[in-house]
Length: 280
Image (cartoon, rainbow, N blue to C red; front, top):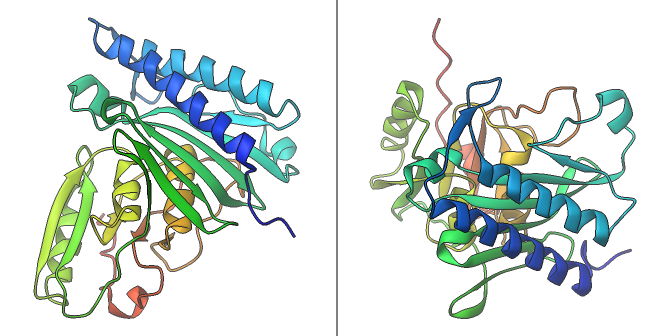
């Protein structure tokens, strides 16, 4: 049985790829860049495409036989990719709205998916000069930043402690507000921190928050890498109906609504209120 999803050489190579993609993003970030719209009306910049090209070239050189799914490429049909045992799942720039608004909360994401699970992930935060790394098989997670390399571990939760929730800076809505109100009836103290992109999952992994409820659409590439970082740091993530969240199980790449937690051992399912139903 393997003792790690990524060998040391591959891990270091992925960190380098993410850093180089981040440098290309920052070069455009500091310029007067243009924004266009994709078919689904989500924003697209030259930074997305530049990072995509760097990542794909790097991964193809690193593991030539391993397939790649990137948000910025056309994926093969499900009938073909359903047979893949392993593949790279990439979001070259998650948080394009944060990029456009210049708040720095955007990320570069590379995940290794094996057996429908995110088993390893590397998440770069270019504006903060940080890279988060998680290997679920080895059970190790760390971040590399200006202060050096630091281990990651989600903080333990307790019934009588304040619940710190991270929520999307760009997506929310009435259902999320009702859900947070319901949490306030279970925990006497609930605080909320708005954060953009997959950085929310990394904040859970480094112990700065407890819970991230996502009541809205995301795609598999949005969360794959940070999902692995969170799991490797002792956290957990599950669909809002309580089922495991898996990858490459269907034609569409849309995720179900989900809950992510820093402490994977805490009995969240017994304590959390029921997610409000969609109206209409």
